[in-house]
Image (cartoon, rainbow, N blue to C red; front, top):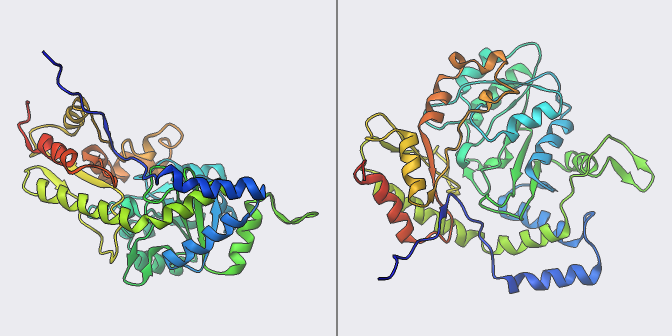
Length: 376
């Protein structure tokens, strides 16, 4: 009697990788010219290619998104307090602490899971210097209202746009909003360079300043103008990004099809809510979050365990809230009573697997597990 075939685990994401043989010529060029880093030819090509693809004027590439966040705050000379969301990856708030800035957490909008503009003004104090919203799951924030608040109070706006690669709203790229926008090109993202990140800059002057900051503050061989860090992207990462960019449109179309398949299969399941879009004109389908509500036969954590028991490694993005971690939970803004919507969402959310090579039969398996009998 033969054993039933065991299916390999299905993770929440999987990096889209081109055929290895397509990457070899890029590596050969690096080996030939001996330029490994320090604004080499692939680095320069990727910056221009990303500007063209994303519809932005200036991009400064970084070794990763967290270094880009830390540097963006330095570039804007932010001090004091920054209003931000508790519903994000910890790097959002960690970048503030690394700069000696106090995060002030504000609740999220129940429809978009982005920072709620109605709560921002009440959190502003004499120490507030900036707002750091997150385009959660790639869905755009209410950029108009956030900018209006910032203008009224003389605040900077730095967007954590780690999820928002390629996303467009009524005005074009969402990356053009605020004073700066920060991208992540981590392996888990829609577009990746193995590790990487970027700051979208509004003008050449701010890009030049950021380029100095990410290279120890050097202007030339003997001139240092700022206490910078080493945040540079290597030539290998930049070359990989150029290759990845060739296939990004096809990858996004595959993500869109998987998103539609989930929505069709889960739309009638009582107690399962799929997050709608936030009015974006072009989405990137970076994540597929569902909310497990009381009407569903299983609790969120019970469904999470059921999926794991069947080899489906979904994730509870974002649980716990950032404000629940030890370095933040003593802050007044982290109080449970201050963040009721974020807390409720964090206790209900599961992000289902979504990536370009996820087979339809795996999507259907996940739908079946969620839609099936609770006790099976």
